[in-house]
Image (cartoon, rainbow, N blue to C red; front, side, top):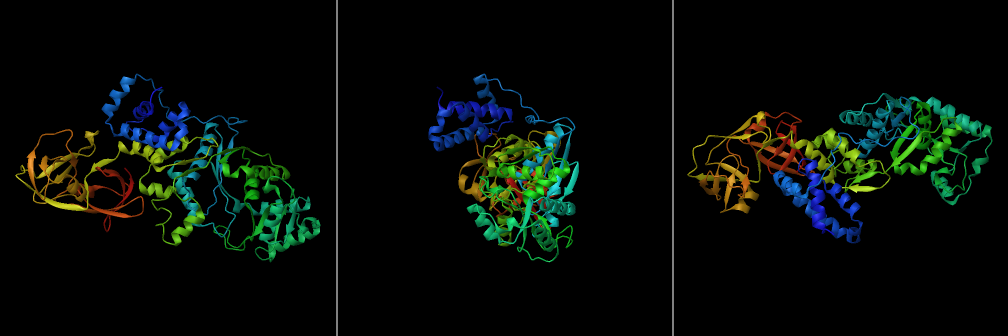
Length: 551
């Protein structure tokens, strides 16, 4: 059998050629392990070795990749523009209705985007209807800015809805459904504390209020609507306290939240709890198919029970795995707390995967959608590293981002015997000469290079990109204009340089000096700082501030 290096390089070359010179580590890893499961025996070491080999392939110029690729004589299937979703059961053209039901309690993150995208794509596939539904049943958490952030995030991803709906517009219907369930003896009003309800459900013990008369329950229901205090009374379904699925043990469906709501103010004080809220809305809207996160799998039985009690046809539900980006908080409660503690800069902190944060960093909607589709719709849980998402974005940015010199921790040098050059010219993009050139003023008594380059290459022969070769020192010496392939090449700036700040992906700030043509950029322009990485211009006044996207 081929050794691990040969196997990995083969799959890495196939992937790299298919995607413009950069192999996707996760894709290569999946291929290697799928075709050689025996390598899973020492998985941790195998993964590290595979990563090293993929990095090696990615370090090769495209020309070398092509040469090695041709030696293998491998045929590669052409990549389709858009990955086809599997067919939905019982789906009829023009009859499919899907929904994305966020709670407006936080800014949407990339996990929300996947759920929205898959439901939108299925509605589009079957020429059906896609509904954006706000499940705004908690006045304590719902905020106007969260509604707006969800709408803006989906618009940014070009996910279009046919209808927008709000549970808060249907509360009178919920009251009628609740009264019906009480009259049908399918629900009762309970005055136990939340702690007691939780304990008795765990112990599978029935509540004394289960045997309330319909009259008594209706009286208590009326009290909930008028003057009962929060936590004093809740409406619970009467199902089965011995049920093996804990969600079926007389769950609460309506509770008092006597707070101001961003859309309805103080008009309502009794609000549906999640399972009741979402299952009733599926019925009202006529949702036929729901594709949602696997975390809700145990709730399906309860939601279908509610729909059958109220005469609604349950939709077909497909659960898909949640995916997490390694080391990134996604809990709204946790993020709110971290913002309050000033551990994060806000909902757009570059350490987060909220759509707002990704947009501000310079990620583009097209590769994000491509990435989300690539994660599939299986139930297999996975933790994805940043470099996978970045690889999709890098392929997109590489062709559109113009190049500029920026120097960090600048060290000033002079150059002895330099040829007379007042303006250096460099292409805005090496592969797109039609975009023109940048003009960089030169004063050989005052050249700035990075401290890192100065210490690494001092007394060595290096090339100043766009100029010539020097022997590096504080008083550097001109060497030649000859272009030597293996010689270190470094960026530089000179006169009229521009101070810039970069907000890094760990929230820290990096400062540097940029070439003067960087002043021509507009806010939201995305560029590549040579030998540093991709960045997005966030502000120009009082200074130029960029957000670091990735390398």
